[in-house]
Image 1 (cartoon, rainbow, N blue to C red):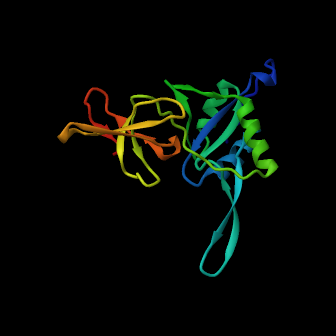
Image 2 (cartoon, one colour):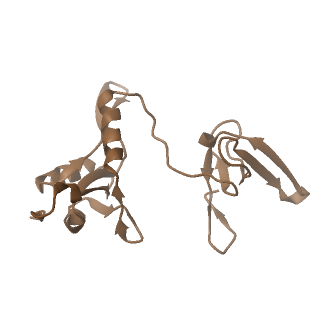
Image 3 (tube, one colour):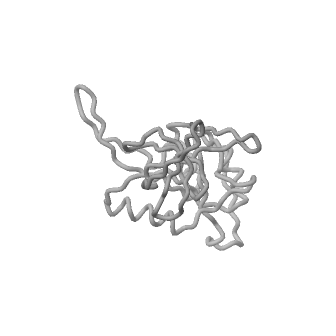
Amino acid sequence: MLTASVKKDDPKSDQQWYAVYTRPQCEKRVHKALQSLQLEVYLPLTNVLRQWSDRKKVLSKPLFPSYLFTKVYLDNIATVMQTNGVVRIISFNGKPIAIPAEQIIAIRQILEAGYQFLIHPYFSVEKGDWVRVVSGSLQGVRGIVIADSSDNRLLIMIKSIGKTVSVNIEKKHLRPILKTKGKGHLHGM
């Protein structure tokens, strides 16, 4: 059985929150396993009403499927990674990314206060980005964003006739289309 190494000389403030990506539907099991290692773990849960043909039931589901958070010393990341059900720690360039404590506190406060909320994917749409409209009356249309900020002007090019059309559209209706580097091909279309 794994045990977490504890640094006795370091103050608790040296620990950071990290996002842990788990196998699908293993969040609660990983949460319990990390707690048994005496690690601080947070699995934000929300109640969801599910209806079957014969009954309704309120289920406690992870707010962010396949994610939970743990507060550890950077040296203890290996212990977390060896836990059954853990796929990876969210990292950039091979280095785990610490999550500011304020963000964890904000999530806790929102859930504890009972606010109604929606989860949105995080993405940035900027001038020059290729996007696809994913909802609304223009769903399926692809184009290039030609203005920044709240005035999201979408440029739709009709290459075969050498014409373009532009329209204002809310950011919530857009999703970025990934470009393959150096090839000029668009993915996600």
